[in-house]
Image (tube, rainbow, N blue to C red; front, side, top):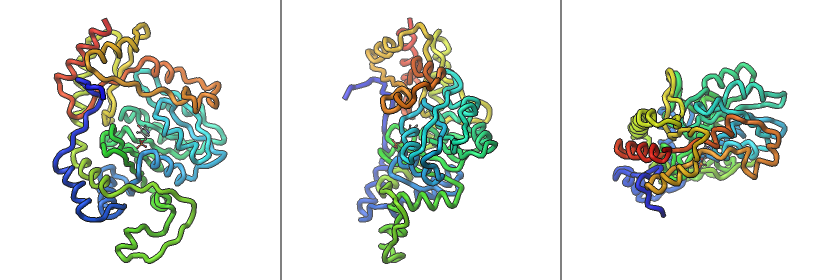
Length: 378
Ligand SMILES: *Cc1c(COP(=O)(O)O)cnc(C)c1O
């Protein structure tokens, strides 16, 4: 493993968090049970959603919300291309067709309501928004658009845990939202995910489908609540387990503190980068929006050589990344995405760079990254 002086992320677990996991192993019960129920309770409370259903990862959460929304063959679902491939794969898992829409611009790289509007057809069933980098972006406007046009809004809120707009948590603007607890996310567990919804039917269907559509899970049988089960339809094993649920619950207690540390470092980056010509950070959250600051990204001027700048930073021990190679350019999609025109997405994807951002990043490290970036640009 490369020894970065300033890595993109850094994982640190408190003794209390490690103890919470150890306690699960001592309890002798590992599969979905009381700790999962507690995580779901806390998560619903935290996001303000009526229901939270824990699953094995964020991709499973996306798959289940597409199914629970009733999306299927013949349906079109409008998605960003500037996202992780899982957002778009979920649409294909249920046999529907993803339709890509562009982002606003290089300073606001999230799904543009006007672009979405232009892609709505008679087949459109839903829109999936992805709050890029943890910024609420135009989520509220997309919710309004979906309501006006009689479409379902789903949210891939993998970047947005702790983010809100107008006091409303990301993931709760539409019919359902999906979160991820992958190790690079704001609530890192390793693998894990969550579905949130205010809809009783969606919650029930999600609970059923995550465990083979069985009418009882083994925890119910252990508690004597059921002695047998029926299988109602074709389901999946998308269950989380108790050690991961316990870790997620413990981490949730420090999420707001972690996110405010991320926010402070994002402010420091903005101040430092303001002095570097040719480097423009993603627009700061506006109005009543609160970002989860999952990523800190900036676009470089067209005449700057991004690969050379990344290499120079790597030479200084600074890890950088690219979020994302647009999905319509990936081999799995490029053949079917023929004729798709996403100029803002392509422009952003060619010029954007992701800098290190995590709760234990120090002010000095931000200063060092900015200083080395300024030197690389020169
Ligand atoms: C991480 C991520 C996912 C997938 O989550 P997993 O838990 O890794 O399955 C989906 N969408 C986005 C935007 C992500 O960043």
